[in-house]
Amino acid sequence: MNKGGRPTVMTPEVMQKLREGFLRGYTDAQACFYAGINPDSLYTYIKSHPEYSEKKKLYKENIKILAKDNVYQALVGDGKANLKNGLDVLDRLEKENYSTKQQSEQLGADGEVVVPTIEVVFKDK
Image (cartoon, rainbow, N blue to C red; front, top):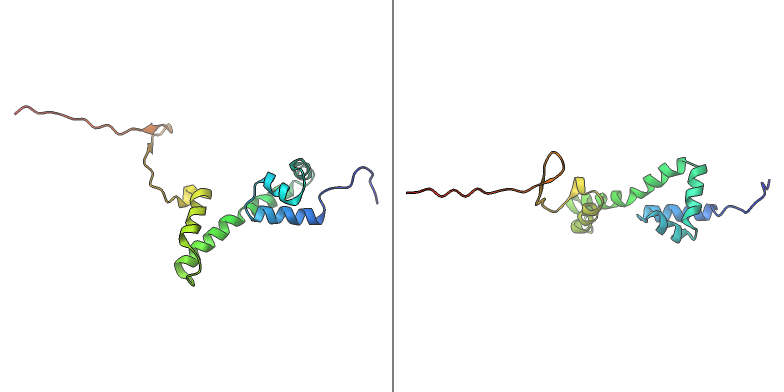
């Protein structure tokens, strides 16, 4: 039954393309470009289908899962996986858990950078 108005751009094909884009780690805008739709169409769809927002969030986690699998395979697997590549991705996407950089600054309780001070004392002989 036709409700009137323009047909939806959110066809099964577009929904599949969005899913593929999100699984690849694309931003909303990039996934929409990949699927050939305007981001406004995605956001309008989400307003009327709020459950899709959670699906989208889960799809976007896929890139982290692939990176973690890559690290795992590099550590225990067949030698085909590249440990550095997996860690590089995780360093960018999950800094709190996988940062490969040493922290050169310490933060105080208020979030301000704590600058270490050195006191030099000269003693008379």
